Amino acid sequence: MRSMRPIWLFRSARAHPFRPATTVLNEHARVIEGMLHLAEPIERGRNIRLRGEDGFVGDIIVKAGDIIRPAAIGALISLGVEEVEVKQRPRFALLPTGDELQDNCGESARVYDANGPMIAASLRYAGIDGSLLPPAPDDEDFLRNHVAELVAIEEADIVVTTGGISAGSRDIIPRLIEEQGGSIHFHGIAMRPGKPVLFATLADGRPFFGLPGNPVAALVGSRFFVQHAVRMMLGLDEEIGETVEPIGNVRPGITTFSKIFRSNGYSGQDAIKILPGQQSLRLRPLLMANAWIRTSADLSGRVTSEIYQLYGRIV
Ligand SMILES: Nc1nc2c(c(=O)[nH]1)N[C@H]1C(S)=C(S)[C@@H](COP(=O)(O)OP(=O)(O)OC[C@H]3O[C@@H](n4cnc5c(N)ncnc54)[C@H](O)[C@@H]3O)O[C@H]1N2
Ligand code: MOO
Image 1 (cartoon, rainbow, N blue to C red):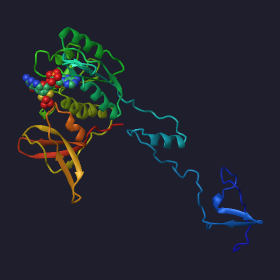
Image 2 (image 1 turned 90 degrees about the vertical axis):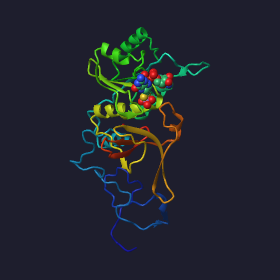
Image 3 (image 1 turned 180 degrees about the vertical axis):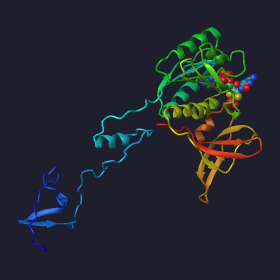
Image 4 (image 1 turned 30 degrees about the horizontal axis):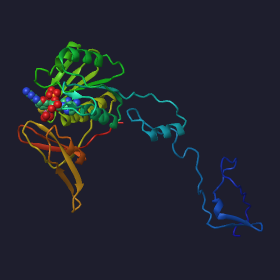
């Protein structure tokens, strides 16, 4: 024995009135004939948790504008903070429209409502919940009632339709939104897919998005317009894509979103493959895609490209 100073041994270091200098694991200590045998060297402070080790007075644990993710909940509670003021995530209400649409997949020559479940799922994936309504026919009187009911859903902080916004005689969503007291801010944008996308504010100020009927155009609208609006409503920063060497479909004055597969090439360099089947009705290439590339060409010929996650995640 090297030291003649007395030591106190306790079986458990938990909540003991003395602050132990160190601990030795139970399974590494044996008392044999009154002698303590240790299977590991003693090291000061081993397995000792000091009070306040995970945060000091004056530390900022979460700051205004942060998203309360699970770790923030744990950290706040561990430090005794039980309540914080938060902004509630906005909720959506989504109405697919179109005479040709059929709610459930079955034997029929009609078009199955792919947009409703897909857009609702994409918003939920991004962290926003809400309600999906059954598809509404675009007969004027029917649709007027459906749009009135949609706008009347009080729990919805953001209101979305798909279809019925291009130039056909049945594309009456813009008119019906105005009839409901909405103000249209833009209808049509220089982008592909999603050219006819519409943004309005309803009479009470809630945002409204009319997404195009073509499924990929609807998904792009939800991914880049609806999600952007939600970020703004939550006071979050604008999403910024990762700038890469310009690649993709370059049309002067137009922004294109292309489905891509991104992988590490043989030389360790990023390989970006623009997938075949970029038309806005073609959903299946999305199953192969793992990102979007946004390519914008201004009228002077300057081209920029950024990569965005396929679905995105807000909260
Ligand atoms: N004269 C013009 N015609 C079109 C234009 C234009 O600028 N001028 N734009 C084209 C573009 S681009 C798009 S995108 C479409 C969008 O039109 P709508 O929003 O009115 O959509 P619909 O005509 O109702 O549908 C288009 C297409 O998508 C199918 N669809 C619709 N909803 C669903 C759904 N819930 N699930 C699955 N598929 C759906 C629908 O059957 C049509 O085939 O307008 C172009 N025309
Ligand atoms: O916006 Mo439309 O997407 O090209 O079919």
